[in-house]
Amino acid sequence: MATNRTFTMLKPDAVKDGHIGAILEQITASGFRIVAMKLTQLTTADAKAFYAVHSERPFYGELVEYMTSGPIVAAILEKENAVEDFRTLIGATNPEEAAEGTIRKKYAKSIGENAIHGSDSDENAAIEGAFHFAGREQF
Ligand code: UDP
Ligand code: MG
Image (cartoon, rainbow, N blue to C red; front, side, top):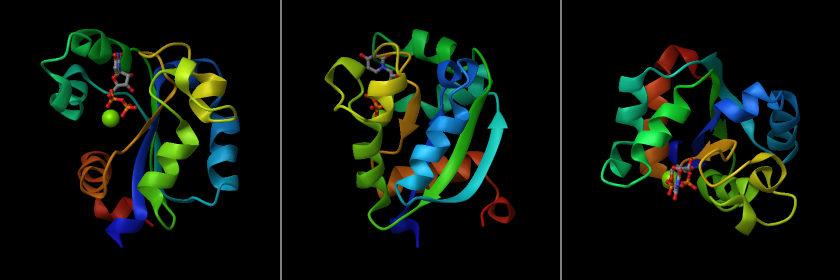
């Protein structure tokens, strides 16, 4: 069911810093099942489209540059109440405001380079998952 799924990206800083294994361990230990996953790199057009909702924000240019700066891990995750529970697991956008033990608290460098993405609604989870994965790549 789409309502039990969310979409994530381990962002370029987290991949570069060697945190893929630790972050995936925390995600699966928290009860999320991996439905789809790949190592990939966003093109500028990809990043602009993915973050189009932020196109008028002052940080949009930097965000696109950062998100295209290196490989990411994209994944679809499944769990009851997936979207909300995953946002809790990753913590606040700004790591300084993120709760202790959250993925962003542990691995994010700044509000921009914040280690991980999590969808903010069931609707966006479905859109973002479909952006990265064909139906036959989802298990
Ligand atoms: N971002 C940023 N500066 C800000 C707010 C956001 O660079 O002041 C970046 C950051 O990487 C964030 C992404 O833009 O994860 C998307 O912002 P959003 O407000 O959707 O935060 P999120 O949903 O990722 O917590
Ligand atoms: Mg968001």
